[in-house]
Image (cartoon, rainbow, N blue to C red):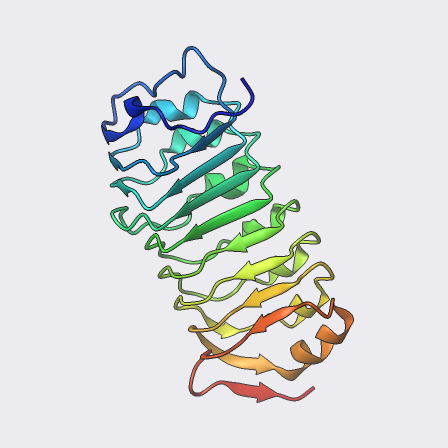
Length: 220
């Protein structure tokens, strides 16, 4: 079995940390999407045994825990989408994201009360195409390493608490088509950032609105 979107009634309802994930001993799952199911409770650690996982989507659930550390076993993961799970506790981005998923190209974790900072190690995931971390409580600065992602097409960190300076080299991301930075607390907006966009595709969507009421333009 190469693709399964979890829709069976056995998955609906509450989960428990000691639960055995349904079908894990019978089927090699590569994709899980909770679809329209109403899942609540704690994600069991045994979910990490699904080591063929490539696509994991969890959205708008009542799940009250973050992904267990055993998910670090998903070395083949390509897509991780977790959003709208407001019952999840405030936690930083787990370290297994940038240490265990070398093939990850789609990272969308938004409106999940993520706290802490964006780890510089995120720049090691050279396959990343989409990074959406909007609507969390992320603080700190935007790491310079984000400018070292050659395949990056979309970066959305809007509606957080990020401050400091926008990395000037972000304009050198040749694949970038969408950049959303609004509703943060950036102190400086480098004018060279806008000028360098002339080298980027004309379809680039740039959102710098509401960076802060006191943002300063630096002319270079």
